[in-house]
Image 1 (tube, rainbow, N blue to C red):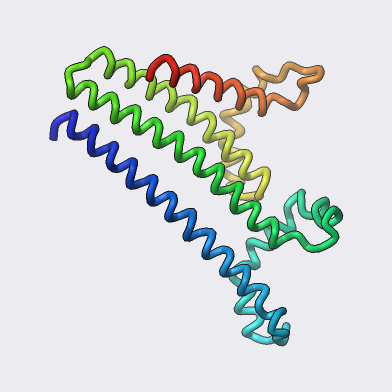
Image 2: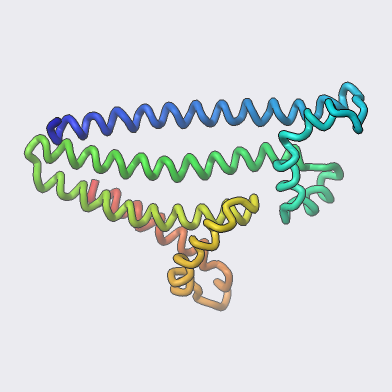
Length: 210
């Protein structure tokens, strides 16, 4: 297989992965909503709360609800709404989680497209353009790696998930965060400032190298 054909195959594979991502989002939403409905169904039917059917219908979502009720947002939201917001929080968390995951995967797809474009240019004999795309792809890969680490920390902060991965990510982010800890009015904003700086750098790389 030639370099040009490899680039075309990679582009086709990226398109298929994007379709799979859309399918995964739809299936996940359908499954979670169905499980939440089943959790609420015993109360609608007024089933015996000590019966096996009652517990069987609620068991699949016990962990999800438990995570929401242990969240730092649960008590403030309950006081604001005046009712148990755990079901609402599950749906909001699902939306945020897929939004974040989609962003990370979109960055990955962009890097793969850059690599594919580089291969296509090399295959067509455009060595300098191919080299420019390849350098840009490598730079974006480094920047998006930092953004992926920050995303892992954010997901852990919001949902309490990926705790071990979040600690690992923070170990690697701390040296950068110290650079952007300016103090004064900006105390505690280093995480946000780093995200803005990395995003700006990524846009600059995309503009210059692609």
